[in-house]
Image (cartoon, rainbow, N blue to C red):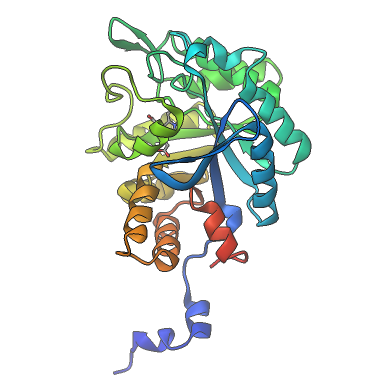
Length: 325
Ligand code: PBG
């Protein structure tokens, strides 16, 4: 036998040289949930190891993560029910705690990359990402609300905005609003191919943001579709998106690969709450070994083509592999 592939696997040193894919904490974005109040750190039942923080405890958590080499964070607000309304007005209110937190984080840690969530659902009494009228999710009437939210977030100092709503035309609409107000350097991490997935359950528990009626299938993508992701990506790129995201990640590795092959922008993948919870549950049951399953999972998402991974395991990864794998 002239060719013996096993020769390149025979020691850690050789395997290290031959490794095709690498993952470093700098590739990760750590999602965080924040609620109003002080001294709160409440674990999310369906996502063990992940917490809702009040602004003060969140600052401590971010500092701990920065010390581990995690520099990128996306923050989601858990909003009290009495502040929710049909048009999500609290999302751009001047006393909004989420905007205050962003200011504090960027003041204390100017070197971090702080990413927002742009969508109505955390603030909407209907629990939908868009404006609801007679059971219908209105596209064009949602855009000005998303733009108001985006401007308030840019003003608060977020480095990048993350439109997660899947309304048509929102990237261009937000980009134009930002540029007109001089926020030309505020980036857009577009949730480009976001699927109507069952994997968002723990996230909706964390924010109490599940739709009050209906589902999200008229705006989030059909899990059956792959080529449609190219349509969404073309639109987002032409409208000014800086990074294209696929969500969820593990169930959509083919879509990650497709966008990576077809677009020059960095590709992000969201390893969503349900995907993390599945792995955690199996490990907590003794059915899988977290120490091996977690890095293998994240590496697989990278191998599929993700430059950037949003994952609730960011801290666990950075703690174990400060220099990457
Ligand atoms: C909604 C939003 C969702 C997630 C991020 N932004 C849930 C949804 O669409 O209902 C889910 C992320 C996760 O499950 O980790 N704007």
